[in-house]
Image (cartoon, rainbow, N blue to C red; front, side, top):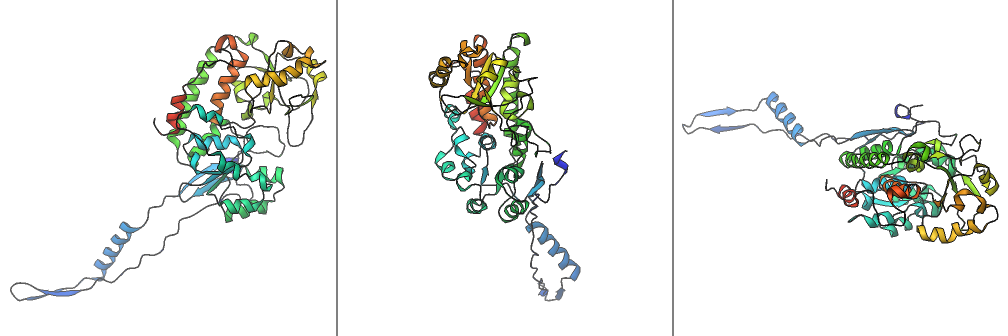
Length: 404
């Protein structure tokens, strides 16, 4: 289903400009005398008065600044002006806003813990006030409607179907906040395995373009798109041949001593796996019948199941606050001493790495792709613990700051 042409149960909010009628004062007719003393009637006709009134109305009426943007599942949303304040549910959409130079307009986030802002430290002049987003986390109030009213944003960058399917909202709740506060605009794109998501998906840059249109920042988007395309093309030109690339198992486990893991599938094309697809790796779970994590599938695998696949590389999520060294000293060390995990090829070869963010936007994706290239192909791109960089930090900062 193409959600761009479909409105789902009244989610669309149209804010039409209302213009009041201009008050028209009658033009006075008068008599003047010329220097010869002859009196001449200078009476203004009704037609002339109407013409002058029309002219005044034309020159004083406010221009219509409204515009519309379309995105599934909400359909077409019309804004009477560019939104000022905004909030995102996840770090991917938050990062899009920052990339568009709007980080100072973000009032909060769904959950600050999974929004990794430390990458901005490497970009001159780019930052996010974490005290604001940590103070205003929607998750702290269990995604209640009250906090939406309290924050009173101009737009909510999140998929309303996510609120319905994850947090127990009803359609009437979505409609209430849409009409009473501001519209929703977003699509859950980090994975593609939820049965309820029966409408169009977007790639990272397709969603980013929609957000750029929303904020009328198309020039910044185009600058990012050019940088991204050049960066990926350069990376891919240097990749080893397909038969020399590793197969990868991507899993989730938050413990430093993990025993069971939630699997992800690289073939679902969600944005959270974008860097691994761009880096040309194959999914170690392909053909196994093991499904990826979704709303309805919370299955887990253990080391015995991993041994049946025995991947070249294991990527482990939920450890993004650790450095590469800290991850090796904790998680990898535990796996090397585990009686079953130690039999895995990836563990023997010490090819177990942090697996990247669940939610990633355009800035974060540049950093994660660079890191992934160094994790998988250190002989080509340098060790992940090195100071070698693969893209221009200053160029990214310049785009964010409007210097392009």
